Amino acid sequence: MSSYKQIYYQIVFGTKYRKPTISNEYCEELYKYIWGIIDKRKCKLYRINGIEDHIHIFSDLHPSLSLADYIKDIKIGSSEWMKTTGHFPDFEGWQVGYGAFTYNIRQRDMIINYVKKQKQHHKRETFYDEFKRLLTENGIVFDEKYLL
Image (cartoon, rainbow, N blue to C red; front, side):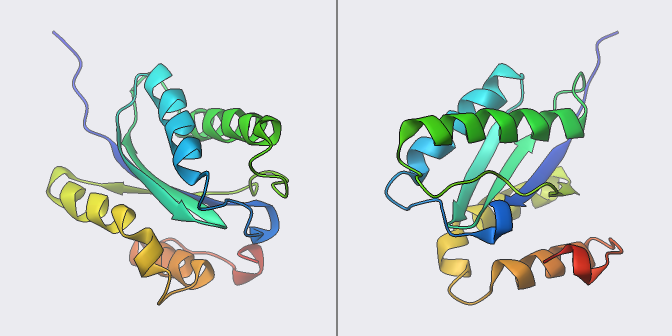
């Protein structure tokens, strides 16, 4: 018998100290680089987007990977690349934590659209407020002092 899976994650993480260090001019290059990391881990990227201080990744997760290792690989690989390109001179790294939220097949298109519209969305809602809302909507108990 074969193994089957359907594991969709929306992963959200920010820049260190939430500094706006991801320039619009080079964000597409960053997203393509992250896509390569995801592809090498046999995962499928459905959508990636963000703004100057954070990104959203909507992808599946290959069953051979742990979520923590997957995110660690993305953060380490993209951080090293960002620091060597010269396109992100103020980038110091990614924040330590992350948010990871699961979705089912019926929610897939809704989340793809949500990630696609991040730049418009953040004209109305800050990253801090968005992250708190995502945690609350997903029933995750959190201490606000760790969100700063």
